[in-house]
Image 1 (cartoon, rainbow, N blue to C red):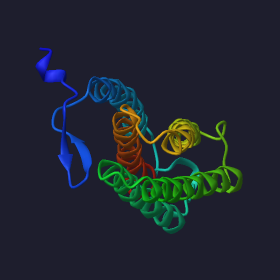
Image 2: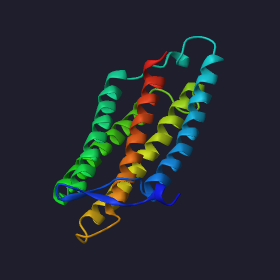
Image 3: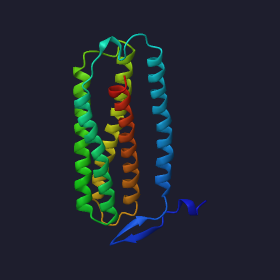
Length: 199
């Protein structure tokens, strides 16, 4: 059991890479499993209410900007690649480049959140309009909170990356944050497909 959670590393062209999962990484994946169950409950509620709704869906003839949200969906998905590039650079001990890619990831995340805020303040319905309105704000709001928390984690990560050159826990922390960020992106793809595309 101890060996399964070993944090041993191997050299990678001047850097390091974990050849086995770290305890932090395993813990993060277990926690993300619970988050997946939470979001699954939201999806189940959405499809249950939709299945029992009478008339066209979304209710009340609500129209959403599929194109604009689609563009920012692409932005969020691309941020997963930039975050993974930061992990790769840290594995190869390229801290300056890693910091740059973390900042790029944060910019794309903030762009996504800004678009969500714009949508929340410009849609022609509210949480009290109908069931769809309640589900829209609940599901996108909870996801937006997760994006915001990911950005906060990256801000602290930037401080840590700029710290002492020999930080044995830095790579494990960065990998765990990347797992979280990839999870947030995947959840949004499912949310976008559910709320904006499937009628």
